Amino acid sequence: MAGLRLGPLLRYTDGSSATIWVETSRPCTAEVRCADGAHGTARTFQVAGHHYALVPVTGLTPGTSPSYEVLLDGARVWPPPDSRFPPSQIRTPAAGEALRVTFGSCRWAAPPADGDDPVGPDALDSLAVRVAAGGERPDVLLLLGDQVYADETSAATRRWLGARRDLEDAPGAEVADYEEYTRLYHESWLDPEVRWLLSTVPTCMVFDDHDVIDDWNTSAAWLAGMRATPWWQERLLSGLMSYWVHQHLGNLSPAALAADPLYTVVLGSPDGTDALRAFAAGADADPASVRWSYRRDFGRVRLLMVDTRAARVLDEQHRAMINPGESAWLREQALTDRESYDHLLVGTSLPWLLPHLVHDLETWDAALCRGERGPRWARFGERLRRAADLEHWAAFPASFAELADLFARTGSGPAAPASVCVLSGDVHHAYVAEPAWPAGTAPGSRVLQLTCSPVHNSVPPTIRFGFRFGWSALARFLGRRLTRHGRCPRPPVSWRKQGGPWFGNQLMTLTLHGRSARLRLERARRDGTLATVRESVLTE
Image (tube, rainbow, N blue to C red; front, side, top):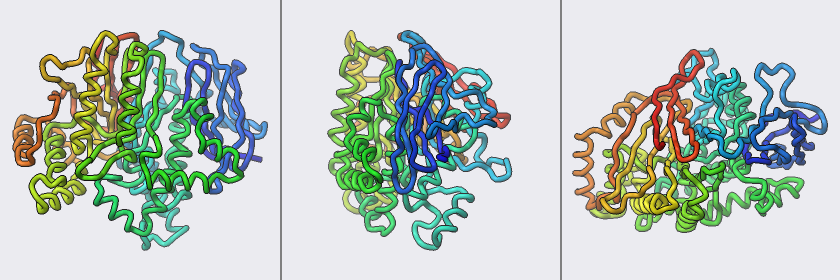
């Protein structure tokens, strides 16, 4: 009899259809039955000895929230008979309803062995408790990177790794292959509260560096060094393969899945491992050949999730956060049919706007690495870049400016949306920043950087001090001195902090209704609840 190893995860939803992802113990037919008669079935596919299905559910009615159950070869496996949670639902908001978008990043998922969590309460656990008790639930949950930590494993995972290979050999206690990646997803998604939450709240996901390795693709020199490392190729291919299976497929609509040639091949093969591995190798050899970015529309809200890791151009003389093809795609998706949306959300794991000193430090370092002050400074810049994680949008000045231009164009004219919100994580704190353009070029839309991290991770005192200081007047003075030394042009926009910095395990929620937008930041407390830290009106 087939068993449910992982999931179900409710992924894509629209007014009439949804997709639900599962991992099973053997090949089988997975079926989803909703209480209102909506349903779907799919045969499992195999990758590296694991069996998965992405079940398309059709016949849903907008404005309803039917409960559902999962069956494998006709036997019910979800909800489990001893579940302490309410039945999982597929909620499809009706046209005109408010949309609640909750987001965050950086969830180190290892459960504490003795109940004393060293990094504090998990914000997703707290959210699950509230939703299960009948409290406010998101309409979609955006997980903006570092869903798993391939380079920072828990004690339990290290013991598991040690039972299958010698940890004295590289990469040591980090994951090495596809099977070890599956261990990370099991550790993360089998947490009881999180498992139930992901079964009943739709999710959109994108990777960041720790999904593969810290500072993934920070520079051409970094990448050359990693490619000379014997274990790197297997790690990278396994990371991309496991991301495609566990995260990427669920980001896509049923129509996009049907048109995806790799998905068709994997579904039609007794074992899709070789096809998926060849795809990952092609993505490594030519990043521009693959698009991990995607678009989702939620009524009159448009979401553009942007790959800021694999799509980079690392040549020091032509550095770009996203390659020309991705840049063209982003511009087209933002500017096409602007009258059809009231709010544009741009999900990018790395913040566009940073504390001023951090921004200036990254811009200066990019100039040094480019050779503006000669080869000795360039070598120093590369060492500093790696030591201080200087790899955000500011470290790619041309891409930073392109994004500023895109937001100005998107937010101008009679078809401009009410807001353009950049949703980010990565930096282990939360803040709100607002850009300003020179007179005569400012968009009519309100443009905001909304950063929220971590969902569940540590925040060392040095980070707290550094990011608080980074917004100060003295920090701005120091930053200007750095940029003058690097002969850096002024950025095309200025910006001010409108809130924060806030620290702790936390989540942000945008409530969008018509042209109005409201923001709430909540922090997880040790009693299992979420405490409101900040509420504000962004647009009326």
